[in-house]
Image (tube, rainbow, N blue to C red; front, top):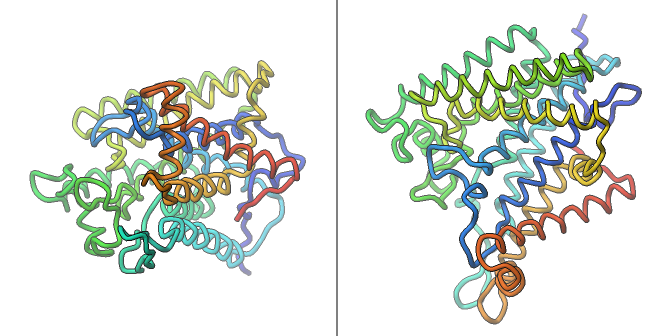
Amino acid sequence: MEKQIQPIQSPAALQGKERFLSLDVFRGITICLMIIVNSPGKGAALYPYLVHARWFGFTLADLVFPSFLFAVGNAMSFSIRQPVLISSHTFLLRIFKRTALVFLIGYLMYWFPFAAQQADGSWVAKPFSSTRVMGVLQRIALAYCCAALLVQYLSRNAVLWISAGILLLYWALLYLFGTPGEELTMGGNAITRLDVFLLGENHIYKKDAIPFDPEGIFSTLPAIVNVLGGYIAGIFIQQKGKTYECLTRLMIAGVIFISLALWWNLVFPISKKLWTSPFVLYTIGIDVLMLAVLIYFIEIQKQTAGVYFFNVFGKNSLFVYLLSELAYVVLVTIKLPSGQSVFEWISKAIFQQVAPGPFGSLLTGIWFMLMCWLAGWWLDKRKIYIRI
């Protein structure tokens, strides 16, 4: 007899189950910050916390992506509670189909608008030979797929041990396959070597000092643990409920993860671009503390200020993120007679005039985020929820 297992579905599809609004708000906050970080204003320096750390170190911008992966794990913790059983074949088909679709959307998003404007004003098609293969959505797809398989077919204790093993193994492999003496440099790390070997330089990120993909194939391995961390936290929250015991244990766990990460950082630096193991622990620790704070105010104290605003992002998170990326590309691609892009003109002519300097750049990002929020609000008012 074929083994029966439970399907993975969107949390919003759950009916008749206890919901934790704080988890939805957490996802919404993540999307909100992601849009602001990805679309800063032009014409002035940015606040340091809105810029990713150059190599080692940590900023607020570095927290956004791992938090989204953590939120993906939260969603998985609810979806496996479905009472309807399906076959293993059907389950695998759903997982692989969803993974392939998200990966493909991410790939096409980086290829968009599929053409580039030349100096003489003419447009030429962007060749397939220079398209970037990996990226944000691609990493989400692969990390989700691996995490979903692990939590469905293994016990929770096994998942915990595998998570620890992944972080230790990644640490060892970076040093084993990196250039001796340059294992943690941009040019000598194992991530770059594997990406160049498998994909070629033309298919990886090329906007850094040298071709290096911060969402490379190899560095996606520890990112799986961010998803698993969100899953385990979600399961724990559901078991303990909206209680002070739950909050206390979450806060203790968060402090332990952060402390362990800072200790590990002494020999294996925290780095988002390398997605190092202490970076994973550090971000999971912060995310757990954030969840504890949200649960306290939203679930226990029943504070609702700002809840709807962030929930709009959470209800159509993938669509709003994709919309923000495509809209930003369009605004920076369209050139005005002055030679400036539309986005650059808006930032300099409006927001830099209102608030010159970093604050004007921040206002530009907030304005763009609010435009994306309006699209999400329009969909929510019409009960339209776009999911894969």
